[in-house]
Image (cartoon, rainbow over all chains, first blue to last red; front, side, top):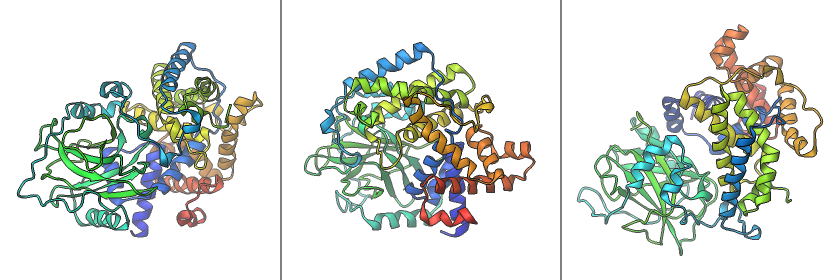
Amino acid sequence: MSEEEKDRVLDLLIDKYVYGLNEEESLELVEAGYELDEAESIEQTVATLCLAGLDSSSEMPPELYSKLLKQGHEIADSAPARPEEVQPVREIVLSGGRSTWFGWLGWATAAAASVALAVSLFVPRETVPRADVPPPASPTPELQVVPAQQRQALIASIAGLVTAEWGKGNVAELASVSGDVVWSDEKQEGYMRFRGLPRNDGRKETYQLWIFDETQDPKTPVDGGTFDVTDDGEVVIPINAKLRVRNPSAFAVTIEKPGGVVVSKREKIATLAPVKPGQA
Amino acid sequence: MADSILKEIAAGNRTAVDECLKKYGGLVWSLARRMLRNSDDAEDAVQEIFLDIWKNAAKFDESQASETTFIAMIARRRLIDRIRFTSRRISADGLDDVMVEPADRADMKMQTSLEANDAVKALRSLRPEQQQVLELSIVQGLSHQEIADRTGMPLGTVKTHARRGILQAREFLGLTNPDRSREVHA
């Protein structure tokens, strides 16, 4: 990346955390690529500076306070672990199965609502391989440097990539997963980049990607392959679509039994990435 | 009460919920009132923010940020999303608050004020023009063009001051990415 390009990325990151970005700018930032550590340090700086002169002694309306207290107590009561069992961020136990999909919808953001609707209809069916799609090379892609380089090469080599940012699924412990996904219809190639997606115990469970596109009914999204997270920090994972994908509208990662499933119970949706209009 | 209220909440401690609201309720409410146009919007936003806080409590990592900064980050994400979604401008109310040193308060409030003090010190460490641009953009929510119009600075100069000011403040706050630190002094 040239110095000029680095400067542009820095400007976009600053704008993102001071004002927010529009869709065009978000796409530009994803395509340009950026270090999540860099982004986090800028966000922390802006968040700290915004406290300057803030009068934190002002009080919210009593009705609002009472409502928040009730809401917080309900969530605390449903916490899965005792204090001594709380795990560090990277080692948390995946345990979102008790949340119902529609319960999750209650606190999902408005922006994710349309995708949630599509995924609520999501009943993956047995995947039938097509002749024009090669069989998957490996069910558990390596999460090392190579995919990251391949991702950069894809971004640099082709225009018109589909991009989306990971957001909340229905597993409360994974609500802060971030990162993005890039996909090329032309090359049938794509990569997921995650931060905060915890390592999984491959003997007990695996992650599985599902792709919603125009070729398939939302009830039967394309199986994007299973993968394990074996590293902390930022990980880049190649997409391993079992069917040809065209004009995807959303990507969803679920937590399944080892080896993946052909029919998901959709109990644990780790993260969702809706493709915003104009980015497909 | 353990040091981390958020970890206690994640562990299911109801008392920690009460403490969290007492300690950070005013901060979140004040941020929402500063950035949003009316109190109805602010009330809706504060509910969304605290829901995010309860659900993300287990993610708090004290080695990465203070609780106050963590909560401010969650709050700003929600507020910016809301502002962009509704296309409303950040309120310009409360300008008198800016750059005022927090007064002595009870211990709970003082803990919150420590980060506010850091923010004030970081801003004061900047050149006056950088400080002015960051106050107008981050604290008051004015766009770069609006800052240029208000101050008479060329738009490019405003952007340069914003960039260098944030990088220098990042260094002051100990959040510097070494690869970019050279720009602070450019």
